[in-house]
Image (cartoon, rainbow, N blue to C red; front, side, top):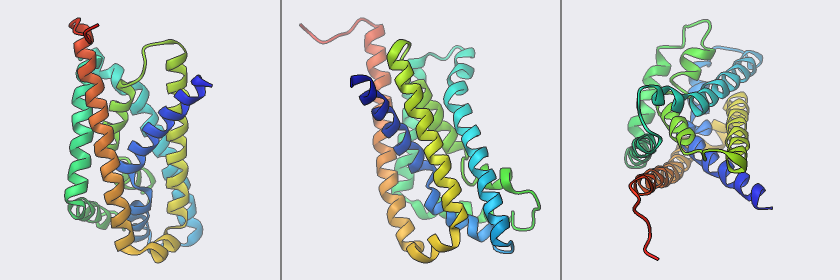
Amino acid sequence: MGWWVDVLQSFLLAGSALFSIVNPIGGALLFAQVTGGRTHAERVTLARRVGIYSAIVMLGALWLGAYLLAFFGITIAALRIAGGLVVATTGWRLLSAPEAQEQRKQQQAEGAKDSDDIAFFPLTMPLTTGPGTISVAIALGANRPAEGAALAAFAIGVSAATAAISAAIWLSYSWADWITGLIGPSGVRIIARFAAFILLCVGVQITLNGVLDVFRIAGIGHPA
């Protein structure tokens, strides 16, 4: 029972963090804008490809990002602290000024309207899984347990969360017109602010884990 609780906790942690930064519902607005001149069938095909590409980007950052940084001599504790600060800063920026982030993505979307093959660039990167998403994924990967059942539970949980986010991207983009008509820009902004607050909390938690690692390495523990 305890093992499945660990899986669920990993799923919720990774899912909330990735959903907050990816924001598939907000991305559906941009997807509709970029693909405005295409048929519904073409949009569905593009949405499926973006979902697959996004899964590859997130899984790659989750499982390879920490090893790449470790190659340069960066410890897991340092990576957790730095990654947590990046995640928290991103959450704070989205929480305090989401309009600026939305405007930047809209400007990127405007330049992509006339492209033929836009599934990977710019729809996947940077509009859906850009540098912010990669930073969050690397920070989450650095937060993984060292070995054993805890690592297996973490791997299953975060991989399932990545698959769920990719599916959410696929569905949201496939039904972009319906979503934008139902929720509207103001509803998307409300969802984005709530997601940004969750992202801020996740970043603080990852940073706290890194600080605790430093104390553990230094042999500083709680008094008996």
